[in-house]
Amino acid sequence: MSDLTLTLYPERVKFPSVSTSIVEDLLLKSGIVGGLLALILINIRLHTFTPILTASTRHSFGALLLRPCILWFAAGSAMLAFRTILWFCYRAPQLATPQSALSMTVVIPAYNEGAMVAKAIDSVASANYDPEKLEIIVVDDGSTDETWEHIQHAVARHGSRIRAIRLERNSGKREALATGFRLGTGEIFVTVDSDSVVDANALLALAGPFRAERVGVVAGRVLVYNRGEGLIPRMLHVRFTLAFDFLRACQSTFRTVYCSPGALSAYRASAVSEVLDRWVEQHFLGSRATIGEDRALTNDIMSLGYDSVYQRAAMVLTIVPITYGKLCRMFLRWDRSFVREEIRFARIVWKRPPLIRCVALLDCLINDLRFPAAWLTVGLMSAALLSDPLVLPRMLAAIGMAAFIYSLFYLHSERSLDIVYGVLFSYFSFFSLFWIFPWAVATVRARSWLTR
Image (cartoon, rainbow, N blue to C red; front, side, top):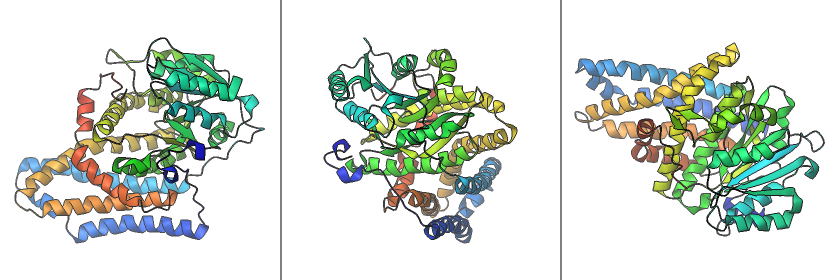
């Protein structure tokens, strides 16, 4: 992968390969369980929440606000324990063999991506997959820079294996993907972002779960390509690892991964064809939906009765923002689509099998309640701070301990001291990203991509 790495940070863009012995794996998992228990006991021992409890009793409204916070905290702790059990149960599906793999169409949409699009194409063309079964379609979505020239150079290198399409004007990522889907002939459709490179075995890994006829969506594992370019990419690398190798692994055990990422996802082609028109024409609150195409397509396919699973072995490296402004715009776009698709999923979930439906409903309910509960807790903490200055350091200590225990899941995926960046991100998020979700709710109809 030397020709696919960033020149400045080649050592930082290697795909992780963790070989874990049974004993080491058991020790790590025992440490996680022990850490969760220790966190609860330490908070009780240090009376972390005592000032908040005291402040709430001084006013009737404070006591009223406190009850839902306590309920959510208890439910959230129980859900974290349950998710940990699900995570223990997760097993990555076996890779397909070159002989057994279904035919595949990889669609790479690109807009003003420059030279990076060539790296994306090269990584897919170099992947371990039978060339007779692999079709690669690159769609230039009306780029105004040199993206088309780089695509043409890639076509010259790889010949007829690459089919390049150039749209006359910028129509959006959803329309660019739809163009590739309509032209694709494979039994599996795979999406790869133009700012990403895939691991050599990623395509075979994505094809493996489709042995099961109920599988309609397979989510890949997204890691950070430019993690050596600053503090924000390093923090995001840990966050991405936890979002995929913990949360999506948990969701995969009940066959309901809510969002399969645009950077690397696979879909059963027959299912995509069935929902393609309504996916392209999706509207929300009277406005055309142009963002969140990945979760929207996941929802559409699950609405047909298919399962959505996570494949740990299908890895992709993607470029992430390095500045605070671009980071906020990315999260704002994600949160807007989260709100829209969470509302849609509230209807789709009733089509899931009964046991899966119950787990998914409980998981979503507790997850969604974290937003109002967090704001109520901050309000109570602010009130308590007026009478007891020690409230703030106690709460900050509690955040740090919780973040550290949560980040222990990261060590199971990668043996790295970068775990410290997971703790830093918790504080960074608490102080500088708290406003994003409320603003996303208030502007949920907005259609702008923000980073284009």
